[in-house]
Length: 200
Image (cartoon, rainbow, N blue to C red):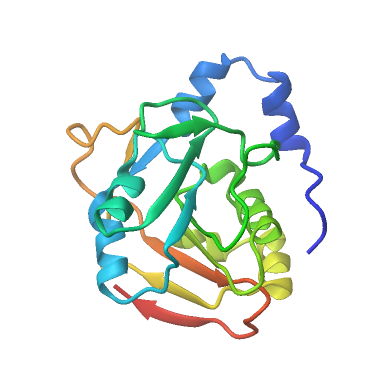
C-alpha cells in the first residue's frame, strides 16, 4: 500500500473549490448509521478487537453501540457533531493525535471519499487489524475500486438482505424507508487474498 498522498477531490474540498460553504458540504455528506446495522453485524459474529477507532463518528450511532458492547472507542470526525467523548480530526489529512497500536477501524465513511477512507485505514492500522466500512453495495463497481480490490481485496462483504436506512443529517424521523442496498466491507490488513460474500 502506497503512502497516502491525497487526491484532487479531497484537495478541492479542503481549499473550498465549490459553490457551497464548508458547512453545507459537511452537512450534505453526513448520512447517519442506523444502530441496528451495527448490532446485526456484531450479533452475526463479526470479528472486532477491543479497541476501535471510528473516524467519521457523527453524533455517535456506531460509537454508542460499540461502547454498549464493551469496546473502547476512539471517536473522531472532521467536525464536532456532538458525539460523546470525541475529538475533531480530519481522517484523510491529519496524523497527530490518531490512535496507534492494536486498533481496528469501523466507520460509515462519506461516500464521496469512501475509497480514500479505505486506503487510509489500511495504511494506518497494523497487519492483522480489521477494517470495517459500511458502504453502498454499488461500491463493488468502478475501475478505480477494481484496482483497490485487486491490490487489497476485502476478506468478506456482509450484505444486508433487505434495504436499510442511512439517514441524511441523522434525521431518522424524516427518512423512514430504506432505498439503498448496503453492506459491511471487511478487510484484514495483509492477510487476505480471496473475498467471501456473507449475508445479514
